[in-house]
Image (cartoon, rainbow, N blue to C red; front, side):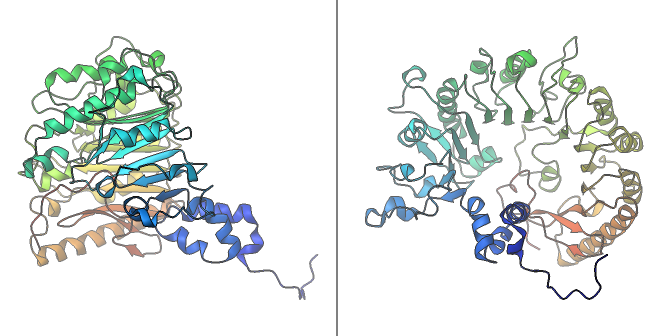
Length: 514
């Protein structure tokens, strides 16, 4: 037995936990913006445990590259820690680009990041410097265009060691170009030619590809097997109806063409008047892919073979919209008219979930649907057929002629039977949010008050049956943003915690003021 009159003091300092534990704490707090920096300032031991994460990603300051007199070498302490370096093309001078790369022995990844609405290209000279560097295996272009024109080589004149390539344009690029009176076809042509040259050299080694559907060299990619590819991420829209068959051609015989694939994401905006975009097409037999663990598809066709995929190890499934369906609901006249938004009905969602062979191993599920008579059956299936679920995200919409109240309490009761639920996100499309959103301060106040009441009631229902649920997150839209509000079991509400909707930028036009 332990004596009751112990006088020795238990150390209360975090430093006594050991470096391994301090690192695990740092890993946990790194998920919250700014928290890692604050945690690292607690003590020297904690700072030491955080250094690897604090400086894994660094930004090249403009003074490094644009003012020769200030080209000081980076500090010694961070040199071996930096694994990813970010550049901003709009403020770069490329005459002596890349002189600083040799200072970082652990450098593996280069990112070029531009402001979404600013047209910006990265010249071949900079790209060539990156892909010829012996350490760099990952290249990313965010809201900017790789430019391999001019003196750029043909695909046969160089060998690349790139394993990861990411080119993600601004999600509203076409709208932005129209508003800025800029011809997007020129950007498409430049991007298409550059990606064709880059991707061609990656076939044997590629592990992660994130490409725009408008300009990805899918026809070229369909010629070869991609034996090492683990992640394929395609997003965007089809420019012409002829492009609709390129994706099924590339993904045909997917188990043999992409045998190592673990994550597949297809976010395609269907062409207006052409139905849903085919992914695998209507095949006569089922497709088996035991290595696939994550599948995200927008506007899937229930008759497409991808919706009967037999993936027994699938842990993440998303049947969603892209871009988000709430954009045209609130700004119907501002988006391009050639984009269709054919979200699934409850019945179609249920049909797909029943057809997929997931063996009950799903852990994360997202569904976007328009409610019909099968909604109750859909929620029942989600709650009972997938016992391993711990994360659910539902975007529920009403039909145009449906003016009935949103059954939010019934939805909460049904989802409350998911005992392992730790994360729940809901977008319930209340009538108060349809049409011009909060066009007066009175309307904004009424909707905010109702929103808080609904979230608090739903959290109370869920908390009784889901003890592991950290918080209920509900989408709240204001006049110029979409935010996830958090309702906690304690009754505390973080109305704007969680940041902007993670799936895309708000459209590039000015909504009405309050």
